[in-house]
Image (cartoon, rainbow, N blue to C red):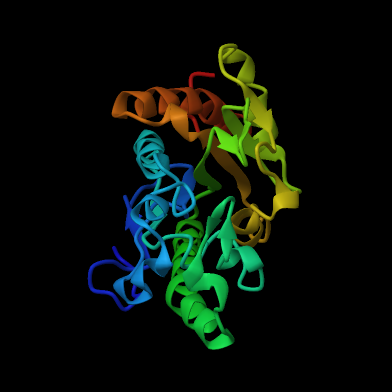
Length: 262
């Protein structure tokens, strides 16, 4: 199922994968794609910048798909680059359509006027957000108890500073599912797992959790994985297995799943 978002026949604003999944979660991957619709002329970026982490989260969609399969959970994936519109940001946030991402300048966003912003909100953010709202509502109307799980990746360095953390378990004011996952971190002593790193609420990264999780009373968590751990299919499969070792028992702990052996 593809969304009636951007008016570009090659892509739409979102895609729902495993729409009929009845598992204990709805999974979200806002930054699944580096695609920039043709009319934006690449936002003035060179090829390297258009394929860099500034434009999307490498490895995140493949990881999210494996979690979707493991949990039989529907997955909604963004199909437009976050440099056009970052669907994990509210419309009034400067970072929703950033003029700069780390050291990457985005010329196509530098002088974006109000009409241009409104067009992107209408064609990217609103269809994505409405589709997620509908997906959650459909699950709840069927009597399903679910959690909201968002999946992201992050760079090993930021402004040249190395990041030691490998997996971040991120939450806003509702920390129930995050706490349950972090209790299981001892199972992976080789892995550097941390709370609200490399990002947390202070960096404005919990919009989806707030709007679609906290506001709806859902258990919710944002998973961040360092993208050098997601470079090959084998790497991604190994990380997915480790994440299920955190997430599966946590979902059982909060009473949403009987699929874990924990």
